[in-house]
Image (cartoon, rainbow, N blue to C red):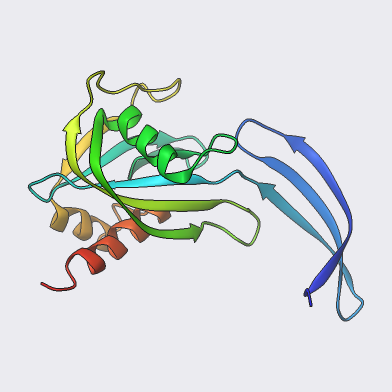
Length: 182
């Protein structure tokens, strides 16, 4: 049985990245409430690892936070797009690389308290430069690529220099899995 039932659902905003829905709900105890939901199509994330063990990170400015972030390449799913296809597309667009092998890592709910976004994370290996190089989208012109030694990326998490949730989760879990037998 559900924790609550939706009495009324009202789409208040339809945007390029997400929609905003306001639901009136009734909980099992009879009390009523409002749940505001950012409805997001989800996305995919690449954890691109070079042959020498460095990880490709991007640095980009994020308007909502008004600052720069080091992140793994990622992007929003297109309608009916397979998450792996999205991760492959975003890796090539943002880094100018393709990968010969892809391994699913995990799917994560980024902020389930108010957003429906699910990100699908993949480890990308056996990287090669893409024939066309980077293909940055509008608004990504200041994005820069950083081939970062693995241990430096992990240290940057510990020092708070990498604090993007998908990147922290992806790097730490990939490290645990990739270095489990070491």
